[in-house]
Every structure is written in C-alpha cells, then in structure tokens.
Length: 104
Image 1: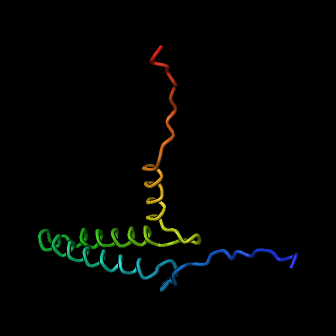
Image 2: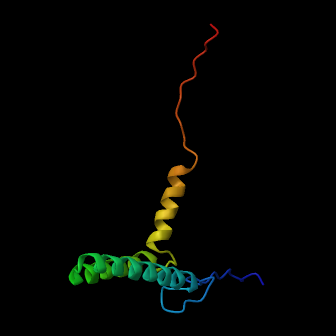
Image 3: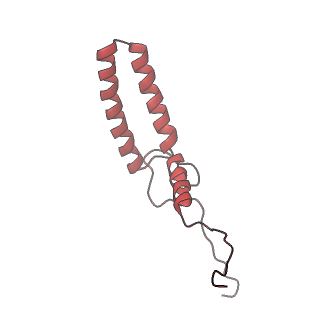
C-alpha cells in the first residue's frame, strides 16, 4: 500500500474516432461543408463554364477542411487551438496602473 503510484494514462480520448483523427462531430462537419461546396461549385460552373476553377476550388476547400478539422496526438485540431487562442485573448487582462491620491 505504501508503494502505490498514481498512473495517469496518456492519449485517452473521450470519444472514439471513426477514422484516425476524425470523430462523429468532425465527420458531420465535413459532410455539411462538402454539400455546401458541391452546391456552390455547381453554381459557379453553371455560370462560368470554368471546369478547372470549379475542380480547383472544390479541392482547396476539401483539403483545407481536412487540415483544419483533423485532430493530432494531443486530441486537438487547428480549429480547437484557434478557439483556445480567441478565448485567451478575450479573457481577463492584467492592467498596470499607478495609484494617485486625488484628494490631497
């Protein structure tokens, strides 16, 4: 009993990944963005008849979505990190001030 050590396992995720780095939430977001991209690219192609631009735009949106949403070994994505930075910037700030005795 005296030699018991606390073992905290590393890398345990709260939710299972369907694909490495992508859980249910990320896959749902990818499906929604893919559907919106398909609609917008179809509209663009029907107006401009530019097949290269339509394919290029869909590939850029797809790759960007995958890069932003994929979680790494620490279970954080680029979107999660950006969210943490925004919350930090909006958090309480430390303002330095000088005390002035206005009554004397």
